[in-house]
Image (cartoon, rainbow, N blue to C red):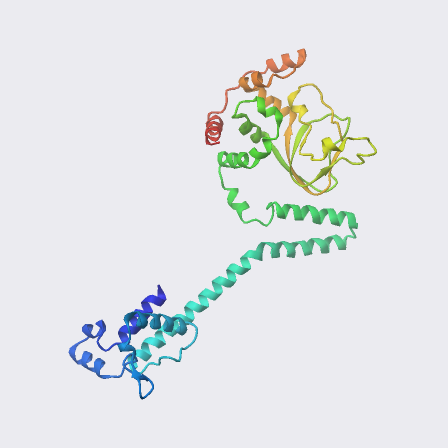
Length: 340
């Protein structure tokens, strides 16, 4: 746009018969027409002279456009101003071009640095963390775990992320919906949800906890009571000493859902394997007690799930008074299900 309009104005100033002449008084118009103009200056050889005034309109426009681009970076040599008005206009436009060029360079530089700004800030902070750990003579193993965990938080955008302060201003209902949208794909791995109504994943997502664990964190211990179900979001898990314990690795190669049976049964369920995090990992934790309380509050969930209850446990759950569902949460759950 700037090049187009300047090309048009530059031609008007250089053409002695342009519209600019009609805007001037008679004396000024006569003076304007009598002075030399760059469009009427003869060029070429003595035997074959020519002027820009004689060229085709398309050739004139392309040259003015090209000349404008040249002025914005330097001074083209093809055409020079030959009267006072042309010199004043070119001087004003060159000041404008310098300013526009400086602003463009600053914006491009700022945009370029933004691509690496987050990583640069993280690297600076990590240098301080490494310096602190060396000052207290922390072991190499501990230093590796700390650095791996902080790198994991950075990769998952849980630190040094500009969206975090903005997200904290959202009302709880919007945060709940965003949480569901993020966890829905992972919750679909639960077989226990297949028998529940379509709105159940929204309620399950509401009681989920998202936890980040450092390397070598023990999630479950074989033979101990399972208190929650774990779903892997990112990272890698393993069964320590699987070969020594004669564990069938074909069943545990992809450890994505752990101790799901504790959600299905109210009786005590023990973990089958000891599972550790090989790398820093992000997981979903579904507490068994909170899940079963949520199911007990929704009669259609209990009927669909068909829990295998013992007599005393069934009586205990049956004694829980039915609590009406929150209208706000129910409305959001219905909206989410329809949207899906």
